[in-house]
Amino acid sequence: MSGGRVKATTPPKQPSRTGIVFFLVAFALIVMAILATVLLANGQRNLKQLLRALDLPTTFLEAGKPPEQAPEVRVKRQPPHVALPVWTFQDLQTPEQQFLRVIRSDPRALCDELRAAGFRELEWKSSAGERGQWECSSLVSFPRPGVDKTSSIFIFIKGSGEEEITSFRVKLNIERPEDAQAVTTSAARAASVFLDHVRWADGGSIALQIQALKEFDVKRFGSRVQFKRETDETTARYNFLANQPARARPKSIAELYFDRDKWLAYGQVDTRNFVLGPTAWNGPAKIPEDRDPEASPAKAGTDAKP
Image (cartoon, rainbow, N blue to C red):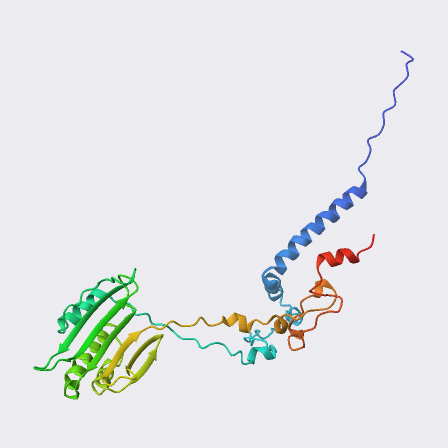
C-alpha cells in the first residue's frame, strides 16, 4: 500500500439568488408594460372589454375624460383703420386730365370719298411749298353768266406725313346772297364726308349748322371742329376747320403731389432718424439747427482744426 497524499476537491459554487430575482422582476415589468399597452390601446377598448367580461364597472374610466370643446368659429377680420394725413384730402389742384383721340385715317381713302361725292382734282401728293408735308385740295366754283366774281368753296386737306391727316379745311366764299344755298349745301356735303370718315358722333347736326351759317366751336378728346366767319370782310367768307391744336404740356401730377417739405419732413439731429414717419406728416417741416443744407465741404474743411 502506498503512503501518497489524497488530493482534496472543491465543492461546486451555487448560483446567486440575487441575479434570479432581478431577472424575474425585469421580466415581470416587461410583461406588465406589454399588457398595459394592449389594454390601454384604442381608447382603453380592450380594458373595457375585459372589465365587462369580469362583470366589473367601467364608469371610473369615463370620469377622467375631458369634455368636448365646441368647434372654433373663425370670423373674418376686418382691415384695420389707419389715420391718414391731412395732405391726402387736400386739393392738389392737378391739371385737368383728358383722353386724346388722334385723327387716324387713310388720307388717300378720304380724298377718294370726296372725289366720289363730286369734288374734283383731289389727289394726295407731296406739298410743293413745305418739305415733309402732304396735301390734297379742290376748288369748286359756282359761276353765273355775265358776272366776274363767282362764289366758291375750297377744300384743303393737310398732313404732316404721307399716312397722317393733321387738318381738314373748307373755305366758303359767298359773293352774292343768292349763291348762299348752293355754297353752303356743297360745303356741308364735304364736311359730312370727312366727319363720317373719321366717325365723328354728331356729324349730321354739324352739317345743318354749316347750311344755316351758324358759327360753332366744338372740342372733344383733343380734336377741334369749328365754323367761323372771317372778320373785316365785306364779302361773306366762312371757314370750316377740323384739326388737333397743339396742347401745352401740363405739369406732372407727381410734381404737385409729392412735396418734400410736407411728406418727408426733416427729423432729429441723429442721422438714423433723418426722415420721420406718419406721426410727423401733419407737423410743420423743420430743419435742425446744426444741419445746414447750404454748408459746403470747403467751409467744413476750413472750420476743422488739427
